[in-house]
Length: 212
Image (tube, rainbow, N blue to C red; front, side, top):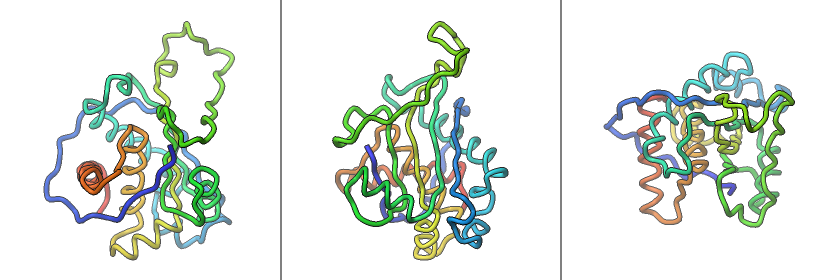
């Protein structure tokens, strides 16, 4: 299921304790420098840096999954997780938005959940093939990792929304990443009550691992 995010809520006062970090295999991808204004990449700090960004994104998502695991249904609890995160421009996310959701124009974040049984009529997500030295009899953590899917964030839309909400681009990126991650784990917001609950959970994640 491809989904996008919702308006930014106010910051909560409460925080939650960190649970042990989960083991995460993260596939991180960034748009080519020429596809995005240099000032946006600079404003995003290490979160949009292909070299410096790998470690903080991996640590953040590992921490968040560690917090969330106990809340998940049994079928989504695993010793390790695999997911992708891409930072792109408006043009690329607009194409995905049209192809997967039938909507024109760019959006802020899309989540493609590999564990969703109903992808709104879209074709199933292709999963990467196993390497030659990997097979079903291998007991390595990689083989046990549960594929969650992919999160795609538009850096350009995130920058506009950061200005609208009067906070940093870094915070907006982490807000959108938390929204996408919850969608990969089965969260949704079909009504105002569900939306409020989801946004509250995002803020709790940001309070422990995010930027303000």
